[in-house]
Amino acid sequence: MSKEKAYKLLSIQEDISAKKAKLYIDSGLVSIKGQKLQIARVLIDSKSVFDIKPIPQTKVIFEDDNILVVDKPAYQTAEQTSKLFKNFFLLNRLDKETSGVMLFAKTKLFQTKAIQQFKQKNVYKEYIAIVQGKVPESLTIDQPIMTTKGKTAKSKIDEKNGKPATTIVTPLFIQGKLSKLKVVIQDGRTHQIRVHLSSVGHPIVGDILYGKKSANIQRVMLHCVKTEIFDYCFEAKEPKEFKLFGFG
Image 1 (cartoon, one colour):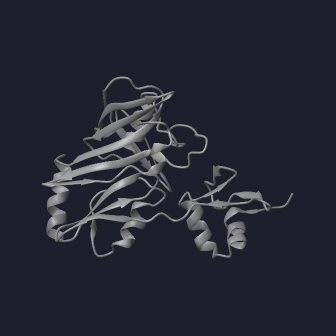
Image 2 (cartoon, rainbow, N blue to C red):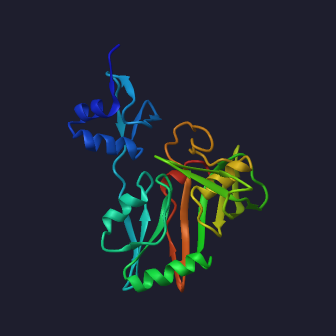
Image 3 (cartoon, rainbow, N blue to C red):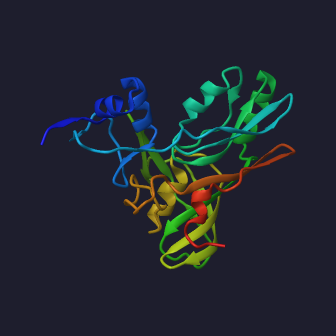
């Protein structure tokens, strides 16, 4: 059985450049037999058949003289999103596989004022998450988080060296062995919600970094549904994949 690097094989089969093939794989858009490819350079069977998701579109939710607000799709990094709006200033980040509300300042003055709001914890950030296990009651997770940054970032609970982080969880629905939650954070630590929910035994569905693989799920089921700053309130509708679990 002959093998080839995944991105090279994808490039040949789809008649695209090697650079574009790598981008597709790194963006989480390529799978084989329902399993998402994680590494562009992994050796695979040369007869493998790829399934490629269409490149998601970034939607503009709101725009005025001060601020531009977008609904970032999953599989797209904050850096990739920023490149679409080069003239503006990124105010908040979402993980690559997290979708939802992202903010850009249109002027330096508004950027400065908005950053102060984030520092003073005056920005309301609400997420929807689908997690493993039954969560029958509300809970507050108040655990410090430390992040190690290398080629990729990874965070963990660290009582000694971690930075303060508070996550407020409210159950919305329970279906079988899964729960749909409203999650509000008062901080913005790297992977905060993912780490906190995993620490209490309820990792987010699709989160292989802090949980486990989920059949037929190829993204972290986490979505920033609402953000409020100053007198603004912005909302991004739940993606269609969040409706595949039988929740109301």
